[in-house]
Image 1 (cartoon, helix red, strand yellow):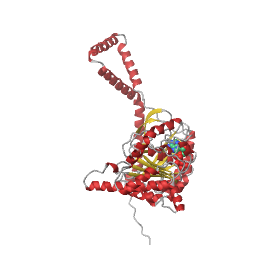
Image 2 (cartoon, helix red, strand yellow):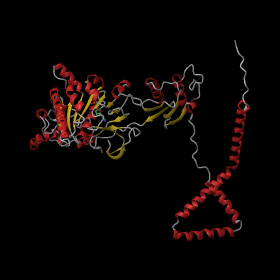
Image 3 (tube, helix red, strand yellow):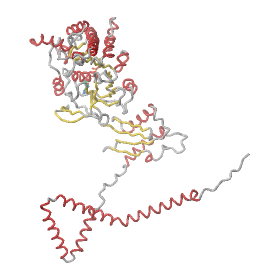
Image 4 (cartoon, helix red, strand yellow):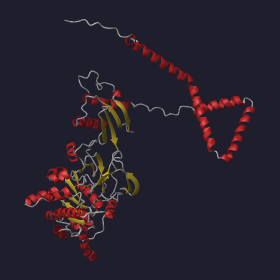
Length: 563
Ligand SMILES: Nc1ncnc2c1ncn2[C@@H]1O[C@H](COP(=O)(O)OP(=O)(O)OP(=O)(O)O)[C@@H](O)[C@H]1O
């Protein structure tokens, strides 16, 4: 049974008061507009008089004290002349008003004109393209509808001189699933495609305000050559990034095209005892520049430490480092790789034991445990395959100790691997390399697999060598451009870049087993310092002994007279 509910009338102010209020507001606004129109000349003259007065005050303040008397006399004379002249005061007032009106004119730049026809067309087509993604059939007041108003959703936009969008702020409905990476990726892909391919876009999703900001990123500089970077011990420059991503800049002295000075924002990786990401994994397609990154790291590491290189690529790309001061070994063969890595594992243990003993005795860690030791491995999965085929130990298993205990022992492991060889990496390598780099073209899945998070920029199909992304631990994903550090023995290397790398190489202290020419001719089992390494394995196994650098120096001392 229906019960009749008595309806109480609304209070008068609520029933039709709203309309009245709106009318009064409209009236007041019109009156204010008319008053402003009528008073506009007066307002302009008053503003001009104020500006003239303050200019006069400034002039007076700027005049040196000894000249003020003369100035006062001049002004008084002019006033007297004006007062005595026929119509003088009237003319003076008219002139003053005219000057004030000129000075008081509105100098604010005229509001930027709205988008032109072609820009409107672009915005409209973007809006239409977004409709299927940002609308729902059950939405009674859709923000996005075919033929709808794009002005409601694009709150800010900028175009470059060619008419392409460079900045866009897009509002979207609250029900859009902006927390889901797949939903975001669909929108980002669409916007990238519709706003012009071949450029990189940065997407900032403001989930609270349901607002997406799209910006076009300037390409990262590709002309930065290898050079001594201004860093503290324990810091390694992986490459350069966007100014918005990092707080710091590095002064550069050398560009790719001659000398120049400029400051650029670097991606700096910290290693050593206080590092939270003591080891690094770099991945990329063949030819993307991972070997170049390793060479760049080696050249920086050699300033303060010793380096062991294990090159599974076997193309002799590290030959320039052979026999250099601080380079303990450059291994291209399985036997050499196993010997060097075995020595490195013993050396890590030796350092730990020595440091522990010193701690227990209440002293600082001994000097020979502090010199950074770097193990740089290019494509170690090649050796894993070779070892399995040969029934020998996997060299990667020897990395377990340096990876697990390297940080307090100042031992750093850097592994470069091709993207499709990543599954050939051992679990310790994957677990302990918390600094990550991906170079060259990579799919969204590959980027996410290596970096652990997607970049906030659109991946490009065509990237220059050495371009990619870096992520240190759980930090943000940075765009990265590795400094050009080519193999100086490569014929394709330009003279300036060759010079840049050769300048950074430490002096040669151990004679190279092979000449670079022969390496380039493809001698496989090349660049080996097995003798040095083998001696050190023995030393490391026996207990605290010569530091690696000393071992090399001893050999060098013998080699020096013949060098
Ligand atoms: N950062 C860079 N700046 C300029 N050129 C680079 C850079 N990195 C790499 N290159 C160039 O790209 C080419 C390939 O580089 P690199 O050998 O380092 O790649 P890779 O990933 O190690 O490939 P591969 O495994 O096939 O050797 C080289 O000619 C090198 O000079």
